[in-house]
Image 1: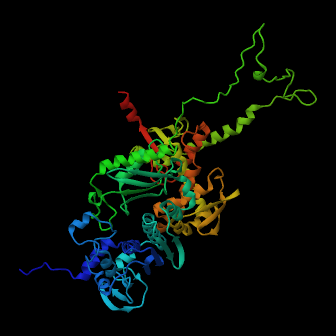
Image 2 (image 1 turned 90 degrees about the vertical axis):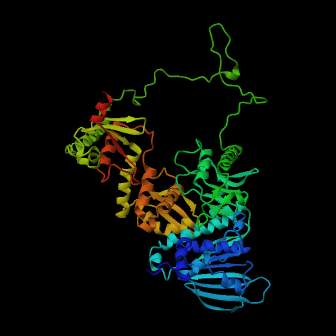
Image 3 (image 1 turned 60 degrees about the vertical axis):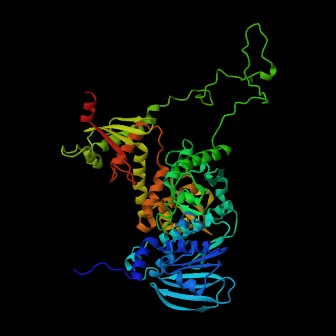
Length: 621
């Protein structure tokens, strides 16, 4: 039997490694910028073409490399960061695995121009698919210039499954922001197709956050600063009143490295418990500093998953730190019962005047009110009384509308016996003629009505969202949205990541009834809203649409209209707790069961649940 096991060639091994390390253009940006940080750069510039598919270029003024180091840097497991296994437990650099440059070179055309500090001549090195094309002297500046072109040129399947330019560039911005947030002492800039996206000077940590996400965030941040023998926790957390459903800025960093940690996220959420509504998320920028020997970053090639030796104690310290920051800022309401040295404010409470007693003091006397007992508001100016008004006519229209709803309900026929109760809800024809005759509102949130098969319990908010969603979606697709001008236009500023989504949304927003004016620098004036949204906060409404599109990837999946319609429906729907009249409940139920899908909201939540007759009978046995 012949031997079948053999070593893979280096270029194939590098392509396999690239599948883990280099997943998209944003991965290239992350690895190259982190290398520049490790090289001691104080100024880093990132140039992008076509969302990184054509070019990713990183220019830094770091310490540079010699000709030999430049060539060795692209070999697998070649690194200057560690020399022994013990160094893994004392890491102070971003990189250490020695895989990034080899993986990049395996799937792209790479050019490196570099000159070490103190040398007169640099090196220019070009590689194509891990193969060195040329190495020659070059008169370049001190530092390094990495140019990665035609990413995944030799892996067409990987290139084919890249997302749209907007999505890929948004991922690049996310990686850029993560590095910028943890290195405020480094000046960073980002350009996309020669347009400046970021130009961040050296600054303090708080100013760096504001330079990235806007100065309006300043009033919403609370400082966090706790030091212990185990860990030092600094950074900022958002005020409870600034929490929102989506689009919150949530970042954890440990020893200068971005990380994802669901367990610590739960710690933050526990500190905010009962301070924010259920489902809302606070923003936070939290930085951990601790002994590198107590953490393990060598878990995944992306190095965003980190294991902590003292995870439970750090969790408790984090909860206490966040609660302390909230308490110091008066974000947690308190009642002060200390009455020492307080001003005594007299309260008007005059004693009743009895026969034979003196009147109350003049300072507490009630104002005299003159009453004309002969005044008749229904009398005409000539003194004759007005004719009796027939109040029954005032309610005649309401009764007619309610009768029309009940007549419409008779169009629903009883479901066949073989259909399940759930199918009866999905199919409006399954409802019996008595379906809308009796309605009852429970706790201002649910509407209970009877069906042939039992009782239907309907979430009134979700039901209204379903009805409005279908209406707004039809209006957008038919381009029939009506705009209602606002009295004072409101200015809204978007972050760089949000601005990448907006071009795909502008047409749908216009069809929905929004009137937006581009003011430049990712700022827009909101001049009009869709009709019926007059009570909504214009800026919050537009931002909610943008956040939902980013969260769901609507611009990439072609579901922009759905994202806009859903956000509008959520903003305009009746809120839980609102009392409904019988007529309103009848109309809501009739409108719901006229929808193509009356059982689920657009995001897949249940609207109607049925308690069958059989279940009721079992409960009374």
